[in-house]
Length: 311
Image (cartoon, rainbow, N blue to C red; front, side):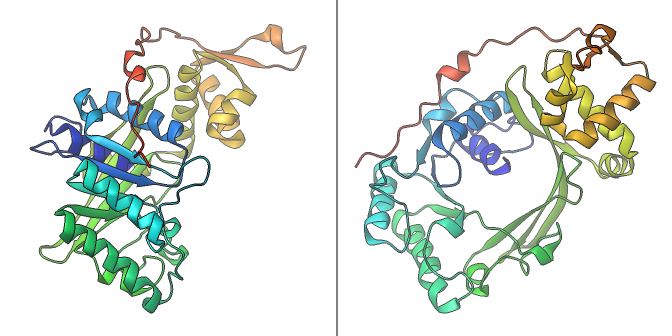
């Protein structure tokens, strides 16, 4: 999510794009093999609307994915796959190429420095040949325990040793929609950490991030669990139109959170159960105040038809 938001801000070049600032529009090629093209496109459109970036930003983004017939796999250590990637870069002339995730874009043993060195050299060759920046999305080890840094990246030190910057994203408490971002940079030391809250609205079909101050982050972490769970259930109810049964809520926030959050909201008088539904065990709940925002049109969803790179 954070990568998509950052990519959109770069493509937009608007300093008002949420918490991500870029003074000049950039072209971005995204080599992505983790989620399907349609799901990726949906996330991009939702972030675009949430961040308020321009329609033109989508024209400066190109997605490169495996072909559905298996005729092309973007593997960095496969001659045909690498040739396809290089052709895409030459055709689109991006200022940034993103590879996501690194682990699925090669066949090498990531714990073996001898095998990983050529992979990292390929990134450097792409950077120098095409005069573009290269970013690779990688994961931390389990030992990082939610606090990754340059020393907890998975695999050989040949991976982090070849890069100029490592940007780490951590999430201490998975019940909170909050991440912390920090960076280790070869030329100018460390940056951060700073905190971002993930915000989304299923009704408006938007996603985005907002910056948290140190005081807001402290308050978020100190908030009683019941209050956080009640807020999560309230958001889920609003996303579902103000009325839902336990199963629908559980599918959004988890069974335990749904039960505890509903109980707390009932105590606060914020939700009520439709007693008529008890006899068939449906248990329908609704918000007492059901004034929801007017629906936003989905004109933006007609855009985002990112061209795949031709053979």
